[in-house]
Length: 118
Image (cartoon, rainbow, N blue to C red; front, side):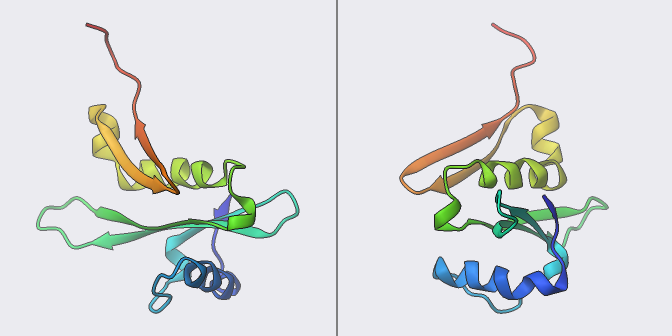
């Protein structure tokens, strides 16, 4: 896992296009990338800063893509785990469900462990 570099942008755009998403206006500085066992860029995730009326920076999860050939290896989970604390710190601190992602036909729900049991 590493921050994307300018030279990664073409590969990120290719992943985005393969998922029938808009590849225009992508900024490599907002992406994290994951490499597979062979060192190929196979997953990426992007946070986009959002304007806020308060002095807290908000970020939206804009992109999370894993190459079809690399799915099922945990790369998407790794990218999400790396991005979530940056974007969803309030929800994580509050112990609430922090994200729901459509993953093929599955619904993936990320949440904190309960702090106490009832």
